[in-house]
Image 1 (cartoon, rainbow, N blue to C red):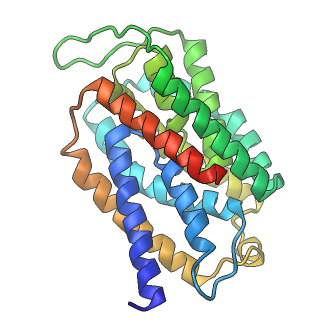
Image 2: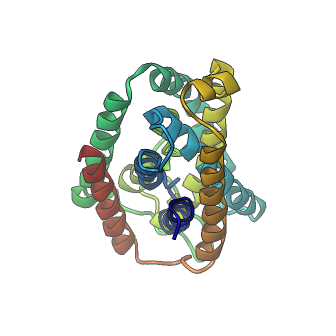
Length: 275
């Protein structure tokens, strides 16, 4: 198989696996796709390595497109509380601006180490922490948060910072916060996180656009060309298809199993970035 075709397949496979993770955990998938994109872009024959921030931007584009359709579906059928989404979104704006500033100013090596450290902390917290007691919802109802409006906005702020700075979509941090502190079931937290991911990724991309980081001249200076765009397109198409397929087949799973799988996934991603 020619090298170009091999990497096209690898990017498509990365997108498919990211879509599975999005459906399974309600997270943006950035903890998986950022390390993959960062690694693959450094090994594609004939391409110059691109900065870490380009991997983050690519992750935001793919995750934004992959999560938006699902978020619209969840909002359409009333699967999430609009007040909770509003509070999370409001809390994410200023931290998102800070994240964009840090993304464009920190070196790639510093971003990688901070990214890995964050994943490690979240993974250990998810694996070893004790979740807040869940208020069991009535049949067909959504679970209720155990925290107030200020705490929800603070959660949105933390997730918005992670989204803009690391291309995580935001939910990699939001999911543990909702389940470990707000007392939501993993299923309901995943739905809420999916809608937030769609908002946070497009917000981050808008902020990056306004900062000039997405200008054609800036991307060209970073070494981004048509080959990068084609590989990202393959990843995005596979991500959307995979997320659509698995979101209809993984609606219910034991919360403890989901939490253990999420912790293992985050710790493995952290180890990969620390390599």
